[in-house]
Image (cartoon, rainbow, N blue to C red; front, side, top):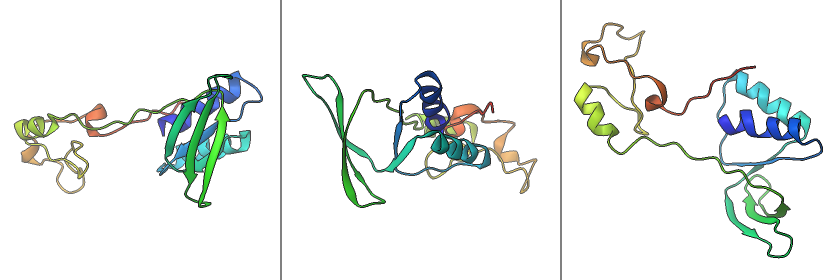
Length: 145
């Protein structure tokens, strides 16, 4: 979601005429980000579902050659591009499980810390006044629309 919000809009605003391509495997978004998604598409960004398999530099032109498989159209995609921007994956730290046990906090199936569920038990004693906040609960995005 962070890449969806920042990268294409900045390229489209700063460099008129450029067409950003966004390679993705899964886009999960809530209402505000969905609005950004449709706006970016309207401005000319192209979305290709598939993992990039290879990026090679042409020694003569110095352009980058991107190879992937479009999983929606079930066909290979090869294209020359001027620039590639990689989005870093965010994962829980290796010692998150030790921290979780130390404070008695549960975690999601992906390993992110969970806070007490406010509707089920707002005064849950297992959490001992520990309030996980920020990225320890998973990737975050802050919208300024």
